[in-house]
Amino acid sequence: MKAVTYSSTGSSDVLHFGERDEPHPAAGEVRVRIHVSGVNPTDWKARQGSGETELPQPQVPNQDGAGVVDEIGDGVTGIAVGDRVWVWDAAYKRPDGTAQELAVVPARQVVRLPDDVSFDVGASLGIPALTAHRALTVHENSPGELAPGALDGRTVVVAGGAGAVGHAAIQLAVWAGATVVSTVSSHEKAELARAAGAHHVVNYRDSDAAQAIGALAPRGVDIIVEVNAAANAELDVRVAAPDASIAIYADGADSPGVTIPTRPSMSKNLRFQFVLTYTTPPEVKAAAVRAVSAALADGALPVGAEHGLPITRFALADTAAAHDAVEKGLVGKALIDVA
View 1 (tube, rainbow, N blue to C red):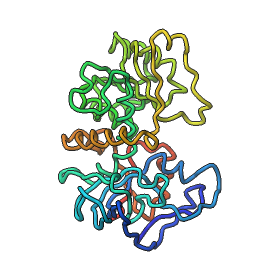
View 2 (view 1 turned 60 degrees about the horizontal axis):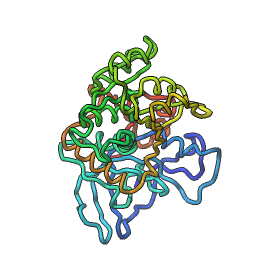
View 3 (view 1 turned 180 degrees about the horizontal axis):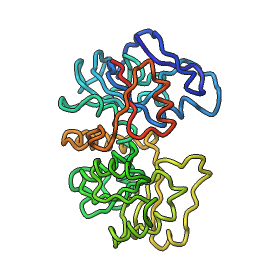
View 4 (view 1 turned 60 degrees about the vertical axis):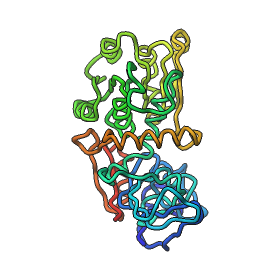
């Protein structure tokens, strides 16, 4: 079968496109014929590592994907051959990512995809949607699992609403009933955030963001989904409501760390929550998967430029180019056509 692998960490030059033996699932595993593989920043960062390091075995990159189940291992229930599915965390502490024709993954990481939902949508979930769900549910008084009405009466700020996590956070928050304000850095990104469903968009290069958000949410913001806390911590504290949560899922480029305005944060009893979807507790991840599946069934997570997440397509042989595009800040989603 065709696959992309790397045997040492480093630049995208370490990625090799070629043949690989077909894998078969062991007990508790499922084999998926991948149709579309999604690329996230975490994929190129894992491949890059901290320098050139030889790996104990070849690694197939990419965590997210979608396709059709074609073989199941012993003891697997609830999934059948022929099911359309989306896959999450395929390559986390495992050698089998989704940049290959056939990927074997634990059964719990394979989720049915509704017949009317495209493989493009399925391959765009995983890291972005599960991260977004965690960020939206860390508030002390929020439910641990989103559903329609779960965030009624809440105001959510999504920083970087044109990114993949920001896009998913807007869609999930709107689906759950929140009023959503997104901050962006350009008019083009503002249009994408609006297309994703944000009720209000603030271009922080054109206006005083704190003043603009304060006018939209005079009692303060309940939940902030933060992509660059090093740059935005002071703004976040200014616009936050008492007892608000600030969920930080990424850091800025070359950021040395976050400086938090201590006394104002104490005065408001703010919660700073760092989020890494890979290491969330199993019950938290399971709740996120259920909620994302419910949102999918409701048609709440579409992708494409008309829905705020432009798609850039690559062939499997061009996986290195897809990694490079994401590393250079591609706006939207990089998807690899595998099948």
